[in-house]
Image (cartoon, rainbow, N blue to C red):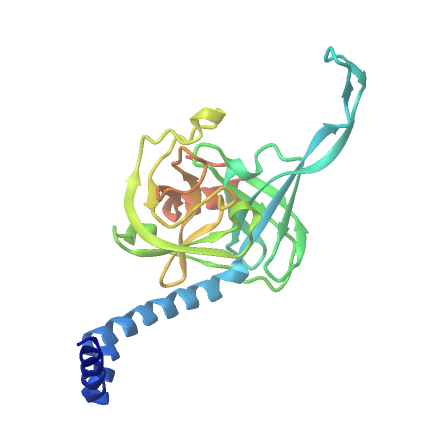
Length: 270
């Protein structure tokens, strides 16, 4: 009896037309259309990432630190250390003019002894701080470089909840990183960003996104699918220190206004 069932199963398998077997594995029209749509979205992401890559920079800060201090078992200094200029943090920025203006966050550069900017093509330049505004967490840097590719600033007031956006920068020092998400909300206020550091942002109209933003992304651009910068990545809400899908960016409506007053007046004028 067992042999009969085995043989019958084999016969039935052979009897199934080859065309019918293929039909089950081939996507139907709806599936093919969905795949084409997904590929189209991927191509849009590809285009934006390629266009913006030369405009996104890595910001390295250096500060004076005392190293080599030796203490005895009671904690008393028996040999003082020496001061050295050391890497002390990093962030991101975006080139916004052909003559070398760079937008970033104030908290990335505040109090730094020295600032260095690295472009995606490997060039490295010292950066000058033209001005900074702790109240909006925006800073404007200047580098003396040729052949720069400035990003285009878009109108953040046109954003709608659900719009696709890309976050670009150097999370954890990993330069040229791109993540995607949507606009989760606009005009977010009363977040008390920077409160624990004594640098609370006073003027809050944040764009909220679920695009992955992590430490090191600060100062990098939030970009729409037209390749326009519509925000400067600033903060995350996290209990672990990593991204949980609650990220915030200063809209360009604020960042561009701050930059303009710094360039024209040397300070922020409200």
